[in-house]
Length: 207
Length: 201
Image (cartoon, rainbow over all chains, first blue to last red; front, side):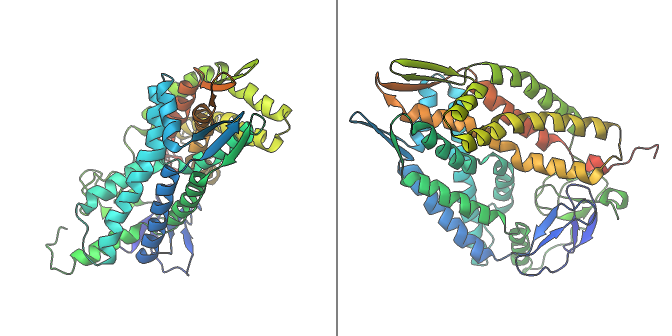
């Protein structure tokens, strides 16, 4: 029943209609967003690749460089996590690692895993399992909050010493924008494309 | 308006496929169980909200960050850290941190309480407004993690021997706990309950 959409906020049944470019459908009862028009998987893949490069930059380069009295220190993503661990706060280190490294890494990796084959019109290996994992991990990615955290930290440090934002911050910023762009695509398009690929062969009626 | 439950339809929570169901069984497309409502939604949401409310107290009263800047030594809670930013003239930043660290967690706890009580009574009071409130909680919830990230960054970068040093305080753990528990509470809550009518209606 591809033509039906149920609002996950109020349970109202809608018929799926074609939307204008960049449009979004809203629920008639509760006005919450239902689905986006943009179902271009190739464009989604391009944005995902951009986010992946930005993530690499965010991990390799310092976020903030601090210079005072001839001493220089750098904060990288990994050092921020390691610092909490060293300060006897392993639970904090784990939540930082999950929200800043594991969740974004898996989200990008799994998106590439799914989008590359779908764009080549083949069904990705372990498709439903990968989609389920992505669904579970998505709320725990907090790189966009971290971006704001770096800005706050730089301002807080400005009284103490000369704090300079580094290339790592640029990586985090680009990644935040790219992931926001990924979120503006219709996720259902990935399921529908996979269905279309599978339906090329005759399948048994499950009904 | 037609409600899916009334006509025996449900959308798979994972892949959004609409299937005809009696409330048991699994999705023919992705294999996940298809249900009309999230399981034990109210009980789970209440449990997470209560735990978060308890942790909210140490999160705000304990020390969040210790700063050594020779010869000064500062110990800041969330609120005194914001007051310090304000006194330094960084007003916009102070407002930002105040919103993320104090306003959002408090509004989340109160709103979730209101949503749980009103849905428990099958209230018809501002259904659309309450749905919007839930949507805001979902989107804004994780922004409270801001202060934890700031403390972690400052700890990593300010290691200048005896000149200056930053250490996280004991409030970091309960503070992160409040953020995670309120996120779990809002994901456990089923917004469709806002629109469910009681048997007496």
